[in-house]
Amino acid sequence: MYTVNNFLKVAASGGSERIETIMEKKEMLYEGKAKKVYKTDNENCYIVDYKDDATAFNGKKKGTIAGKGVINNRMSNYLMSLMEKEGIPTHFVEELSERETVVKKVKIVPLEVIIRNIAAGSFSKRFGVEEGSTLRNATLEYCLKDDALDDPMINDYQITAIGAATKEDLETIADLTFKINDFLKAYFLKLNIELVDFKIEFGKTPDGKIILADEISPDTCRLWDATTHAKLDKDRFRRDLGDVEEAYIEVAKRMGLIGE
Ligand code: UDP
Image: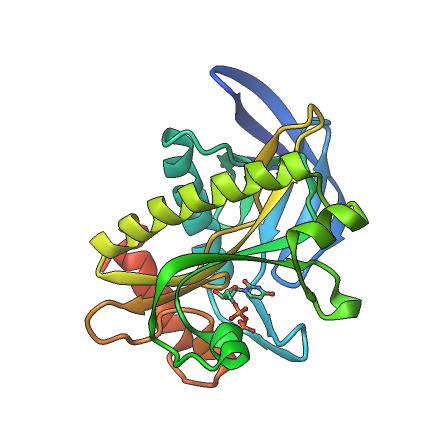
């Protein structure tokens, strides 16, 4: 409906007022592991295009998860619009198509921000804590986004020392991240899903505001069925557990994003 000769008619909502604008998808700015990002003729917006490509272990394992791009696009947009209602600022503007979304232009803060509620993955390995152990408190950790360095873990002092973020920005990021965890944990529990851990990224708008960016999906969260503890996320791909597509579909169904 929106794509006519590469011209996209977008009702871009900027804050409280709604701006009707014709948005042209321009040259690709960046191709990541799971998404492509395009410039538009609106200097405040980008268009992201979700792919079915899947990678793990810093790109060493590669594959495809059929339909993943469609599910992650829908899921991320839906969760971000719910969070906006909770007062959490996000980059989400408007879903254009199954795989394309208009987002606010930001400069990504080069940190992977990770919250954990239950031990799993690298946390279990690093600290010798059995996978599945409930943690006494949620943990917050940062990794520096740098593929060449294998995204090393980094602490607050190191982050400000190298200028990856300021102290003020880190405080905002930590506050927002715990709010996002509270919201997502409660949301998924209603769907009988445990939010084990997740990774998020933040961006800075041209006027200096820190907002949630990137995506929230089974690519970036560990989601376990609360009864059976079955994994419903990218660990099925990482660990060759099978039924990868089915896991993504199951989460989307429970969220009411696709029919039975
Ligand atoms: N994660 C991610 N991208 C990364 C690394 C981790 O989305 O590049 C997510 C991962 O899906 C999990 C959480 O961050 O939900 C914590 O991952 P962990 O540090 O345990 O690393 P992993 O075991 O995935 O290597």
